[in-house]
Amino acid sequence: VQLQASGGGLVQAGDSLTLSCAASGRTLGIRAMGWFRQAPGKERDFVAAISWSGAITYYAGSVKGRFTISRDNAKNTGNLQMNTLKVEDTAVYYCAATTVRSGNYAQVEYEYWGQGTLVTVSS
Image 1 (cartoon, rainbow, N blue to C red):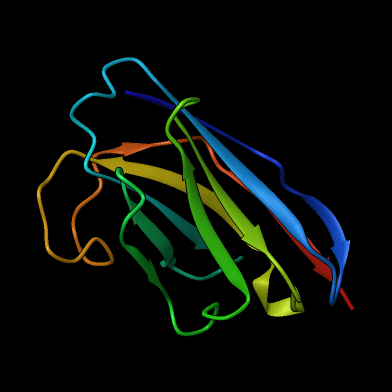
Image 2 (cartoon, rainbow, N blue to C red):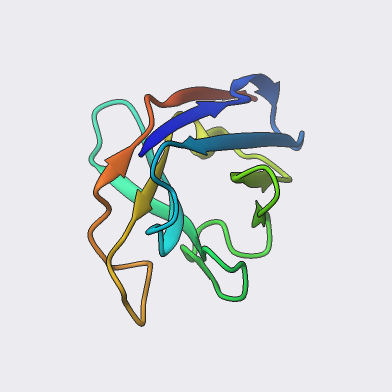
């Protein structure tokens, strides 16, 4: 499975931005897609995840209500709509995919990772 993330950029606080993640290769076994982020000097954190069917979503508390994760089955892509961005949302955002069957895709191990896309939010 190959993942290609895109859509990062420089925005101001309060703005919106949408990240996309295109999956290719052997995608039939994918169970879920997730987004993670790593701010400078910090560990990588979970942001959001969605089951491959799109039926179930998971969010970190810090983004719930502001970010929306979605899937486009026809295009094998996942999107992360980010609204009301804050300076503390500044990070490199990574998309990931897992073939592991789980009841909680916020905590499962993700085997495949994209290259990351930088989101910078200025005040």
